[in-house]
Amino acid sequence: LKDIQLIDSYYYNKLEFIRFDSNVGKFVGYTELGVKNAERWNNIPSQIASEAAQRETVCLNNVGID
Image 1 (spheres, rainbow, N blue to C red):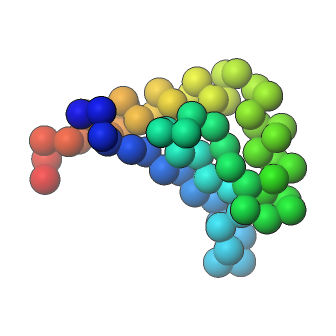
Image 2: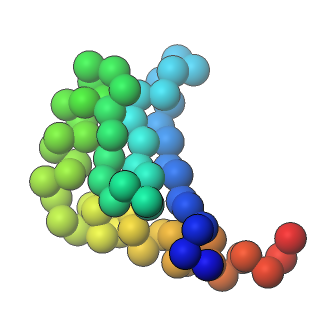
């Protein structure tokens, strides 16, 4: 179960600008706006903890369905 990964991507005008990857454990920005938001969001411990908890809530509870 350690190889299960949660990716939470945010898009604007069909362009991905920021992503949370549970394997990396932080937000990564892909545009100028995304980089600024990633820096800000990565400095909020509760935001990181909330995203990391989503892996267990969403992925691990549903792994046996498929």
